[in-house]
Image 1 (cartoon, helix red, strand yellow):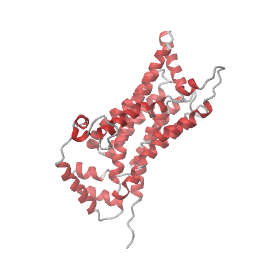
Image 2 (tube, helix red, strand yellow):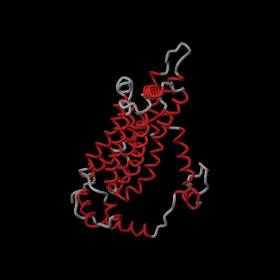
Image 3 (cartoon, one colour):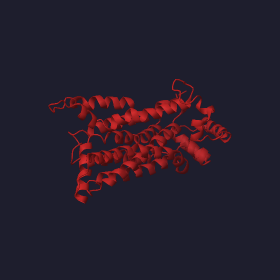
Length: 335
C-alpha cells in the first residue's frame, strides 16, 4: 500500500501564499528606523514651506513618534477585526481584501514626499498597521485550517519564519548604502506593497478554507471538493466528521468576551501573577507588557539611539559599525 502523501502541491502553494502576507509585518516593523533623519527633515521642510516657520525639535520628535507608534495602533485595530472579517468574507477573500489595503497604504506612503504631504505618510502607516493586524489573525487561521492535523504545527511555523525574513530584508534594504537615503526612502515605503502583491497573485490559485466552507457556509459538497484537491485523495470522510464534531461542540460552547477573559477567575486564575503558569491572565498580561518595552523600542529606534550614545566627545561615531548587526540579531530573536 502506497504511503499517503501529506505535502501535496496544492497544500504547499496555499501555505506559501498564506505565509507570504506576514512578510509585510516584518518589513513594516523594520523599514522605518533607518531613514528617520531624512523623514523628519522632510516633515520639517514641508512645514517651513507652508508656514515660513521652523518646527522645534520637540514637535519634530512628536511627529516622528506618531509616525512610528500609529503602526502598532493600526495593528491592534486590524487584529481585533480579523475574526469578524474571516467570518464575513472567508479566510481567502479576507486576505484578498487585506492585500488591497496594503497596496493602498504603500502608495500613500510612497507619494507623500512627492506631493509634500507628511499626513499621507502617517495615514499610510495607520492603514498598513491595520493590514498587518489582519494578517496576524487571518494568515495563521488559514494555514491551520488547510493543513492536515499531523503537520499543522510544522506548517504553522511558516508564520514566524515569514515575519523574521521580512524583518531581515527590511534591515538590509533600508541601510544607507541601499535605499535608506534622502532620495530613495519613498522606495522603501513602496516596497511594502510587494508582499501584498505576491499574496494576491498566489491566492488566485488557492482554495477557500474547508473549515469555513463547512462550518460557516454549511456547504459540505464544496468542502469535500476542496479537501480532495488539498489532500489529493477522494476519501476525506475522517476530516469531514471531525469538523462536524467541532460544530456540535461549538453550538454548546458559551462565548466569552475579552473583558470576561481578563476579569473572570474561571479563565484568568490568579491575576497579575507572572509566576503562576496556569493563569491565562498572567501570561497574557506579561505578553502585553513585553511589547512596548522590548521589541518595539529596539526596532523603531535602532537608528537614533545608537547614534546618540555611540558618539565620543570628539564627535566620532564609535558605535555605528556594529549598530545594525547587533540590533538586527536582537530584533530577529525577539520577533
